[in-house]
Length: 413
Figure 1 (tube, rainbow, N blue to C red):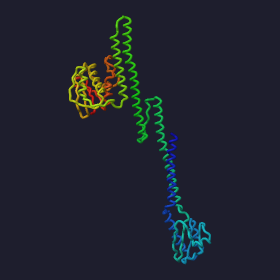
Figure 2 (cartoon, helix red, strand yellow):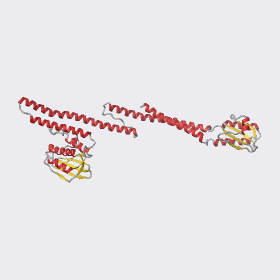
Figure 3 (cartoon, one colour):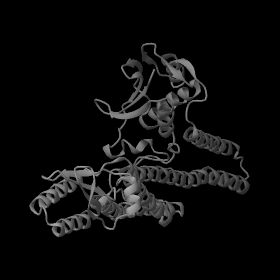
């Protein structure tokens, strides 16, 4: 971060210096020193009045010219009305020799020439030697002071920006080292703060995914041990008693196969961004086919949705199976059309779900308190939510009037 901090600071200081130099150059070549004009004109007129006051006193006039040349740092000369030059000349010092001055007729190059008339007809001429004079130096000092002040003020600004980036870098390094709970402080409301907010949100999502995968693996190992243990016991019982255990082995193998299929489907749904197959599906007809396997009827109106018919069929099957396992079967299955899209409702008259469990029942491997350990692995409702969200919809639980549960699935058209 130190290199970035120095680069930002040096870039700002260099910009200020370039601006200062360009301002001085433009002022020198294009601007008339307007702030100095009144001062020079005033001094010239004042010199003419003083010459009037000391008319005829050559020494006094020479002193006035010398003082005026000294104060204005200029070429000063007093002309007669002829225009024959008088012998009174002054400079600080004069840039020309007498011969050069006689040949040029006191011609000067560059810059303005100021004049004032004396009462006896003589003309006082003043030519400042420097274009910037004293006021230009003041402007340069002022711009230099502003540049220095801005350079001092920009240092803490650039330092604060890079310091926040440094803290953000430390947070990213901690997260990359395996500290999934690492977060960075959000300071300010600028782009750096937005970057910190985005990092914290991404870190939170990654942490949730990693925790979910860890829990999934832990639950998988537990769930897979159960049918394997029963298979081992069946084989040992068969070996000890000489009785066939084919039926028990087949049942456990079938249960293990279903569990592995659900795990694979869960992993595939987590990785999918959209359904693999996109078709127009009559949700009422699809629900009626699945409900027939459980000896249940479906009511409602014909409603079509766009999605994967295999996944939608699995969604309906899991809901009806959940009602059969936990409530003895579904009391009402209906399909309707709402403003949000197609709606599938499955109701049962079972014991219902406690308020604190109504959101957790859609988590993988979650079992309600007091539930039987033989009632599946706890992936049925989780798969229902994954399929619904993959199609752009969702599933929600609501208590049924009169007791029981009501699962509502909404799928956009």
